[in-house]
Length: 471
Ligand SMILES: Cc1cc2nc3c(=O)[nH]c(=O)nc-3n(C[C@H](O)[C@H](O)[C@H](O)COP(=O)(O)OP(=O)(O)OC[C@H]3O[C@@H](n4cnc5c(N)ncnc54)[C@H](O)[C@@H]3O)c2cc1C
Image (tube, rainbow, N blue to C red; front, side, top):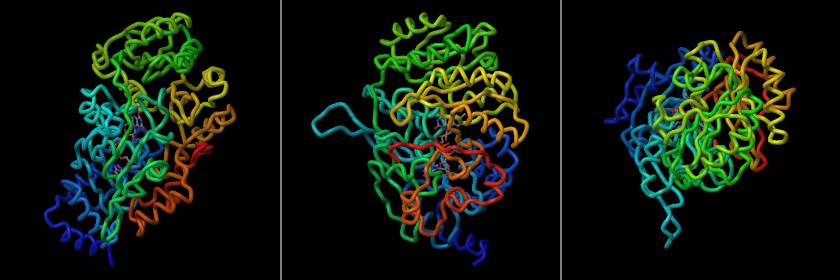
């Protein structure tokens, strides 16, 4: 059957469910933030869905998914569209199904007879910050969230993201225990809802929506301390790095984000530039109020100076401080200079400080180093790279190889194809889940095991992949 006939059939089957085939709407809803990558900017432009579907709840989603399965229409699931790797782009047309109306915190759960909640459960389209807002009066909060917490949906974070604010203490989403459960809808004529717990959640996490449609997410909680934001300057990057490693390795010091930026990067943030003397490097961090005196000691030990401190979200810079870290750092660097880019390199936990300093020095001619401190697979690491002006794909490949030779593990953050990206292992378990949850292979076409040469060829970079002990 031709796709146009299938689409006609699909439209009929959708009945009262909201949909659109308006070209402008299709263009907008087929994009995410891939333009942050100079490689993807041109490559993914013009890849549009043929129909946009906006179910109002789980039952309408089930009807829409069943209709797509019946007519064999490819599906791209859409949350807030804030992914940076083109995960949300429909590479092979078909339907974009927007799940942002599946919203609301379902509840928080504790052990029977115990008061403090242990996990929170929400519908997949709930904005991440709204979950924290609902749960905080109980004295608890999410262990981690992306720097896009005020835009991203929790389903999109689980399907497209990997770590964020909180990862310097709790590790990445993939680490055992950081996702409690997922409810997933299968793509079949009669869609089923399947509950995944334990290690099974990782077959769906960071699968770019290829392994089922996440309808509910259950996440573990952490105490909601009174968080303070601190902007700290250091005379050089070496001391900023030493402080960052020391503060994260001090297990009794409660931090939520530790984000070192080498000179001159602080000057690229007009909102913060006045706080950091020109020539100095900077660490942005969030610390629990009871840990601030310990942070002050460590800053002093390393020759730094706290230039600004305030309660979370109350800074004179107009945004939560975490919106200058993680993916937001590059967003803001690119406002300074649209050609700037970076790579997603993971530093080895062993000799971490030495490795940060070695990369900072060796790549000084290329550009200043920015990393985010994070725990991963039980060890302290950091992720990031020198920030440099993009010239060509060959330049990216050659920098990637140099970073690999320096002992770093590189994921290709300039591709929407999972296998070419390297952050997510795609093994037999993932392939089996795909067969079970998406037997017709309609979800996220071209991003899992059926990638196109036009994309993989154009985005190829040497890729050391990230391995996990407990994969
Ligand atoms: C400025 C900026 C900062 C960022 N910071 C971080 C960060 O700190 N940490 C981090 O991990 N990421 C970060 N990201 C990327 C991150 O993926 C998104 O911010 C966010 O988590 C994605 O949520 P979303 O609702 O926008 O998902 P979308 O972009 O809509 O979707 C992301 C992927 O998930 C799929 N998907 C969406 N919803 C579902 C669902 N219900 N079921 C199945 N598949 C689904 C989509 O098809 C797509 O492949 C950042 C991005 C930007 C632009």
